[in-house]
Picture 1 (cartoon, rainbow, N blue to C red):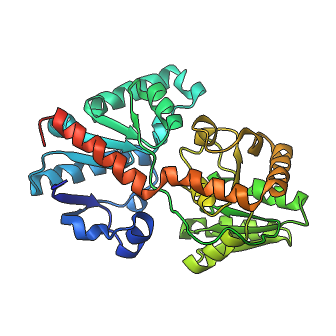
Picture 2: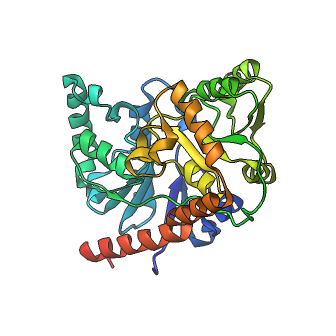
Picture 3: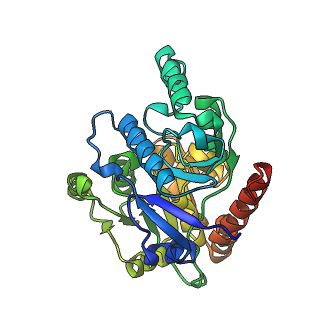
Length: 341
């Protein structure tokens, strides 16, 4: 597009990671870098507010250092400087912290006052919004009374052969954190003692105690692959028939699409993008433990090579190539509308 890119982030992008996730070394495209604050470095007291305030000052310093025509924000919402707000695109992955649009919260008068105050201070109403799913788009409309354009995020794609025998293996692809509800995974494993459960996920230092708790209560048919290598991860994916994804209200679910590309049938909670965006068939979505066990059994018995190939084809709709095409078209059109091209 002929655009120079200046990056403000907590760390410089790792070429190995971006090459794997996006198929390119993004560092080759960066003309300048400004180090912002890492959210893990912020004290937990009032963290959502602090994160936005600290990010605001980082952006102001960033704008002072570089003469920018427009900015694109990804990740958590920040307080956008007013002078650049109408030349800002924000890719919202979820309305975080105090601004989550749970229905009963949004009906609260106090919550509505908080949101309105934040909208005014943050200048979010002047910003052009992108988001990662129709489910998230609905939340943004409910929380902020503002529209957003859906561009699905890039998801890993696999090309290994799907024409091989697989045992009854259920896997996970999720960080080992309490919000991912691994307790449900372990309960399903307990009820299906003849099925292998291979749990893939990263563990951060603050969640070591949680991961140890999971190990202590797991049954013998459960194997943990914490902070697995790429080789170990692919080995598990190649042997698995089912992904059990227990995070309720998943905003998009890159893990769901990644599993599909590996020829794995996803079983998820009946909510989030899995439901609203049609990522997962209704028969493979559940509302309680009994439903989860039923859906997992159904998926295990339904798996075959033809089903695996159809899942891989569907996953291509969310490929890095598809993302790059759609985001390029959107930004080009947006720049023309702002007379910035």
